[in-house]
Image 1: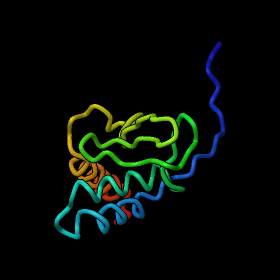
Image 2 (image 1 turned 30 degrees about the vertical axis):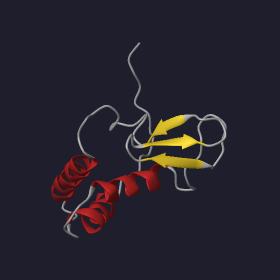
Image 3 (image 1 turned 60 degrees about the vertical axis):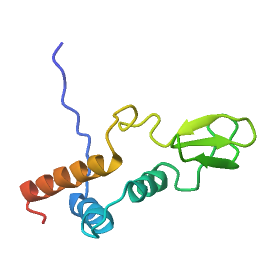
Length: 114
């Protein structure tokens, strides 16, 4: 049986907006730091603040030497990058975000939205 095409409408992402956010917040300010990238990732992953995946508590402390968060209620630990494309990459977030900004620039140029 042949596959049928569906009429699913997909909205085009706003590459220009994402591009400008990355460029403004990280690449054009100079002095791009790992900490700034961690902050953006944290805000994107946990917009309402960090919460424990195990018990739901919002009483977490950061362990900077391991770049993890530990729950004060149940001792569960979770890294900022766990479950993301950044996990186990051993590359700094600054490199990931710079690559993302470059890709977005290229897509924006291709679509003529720069």
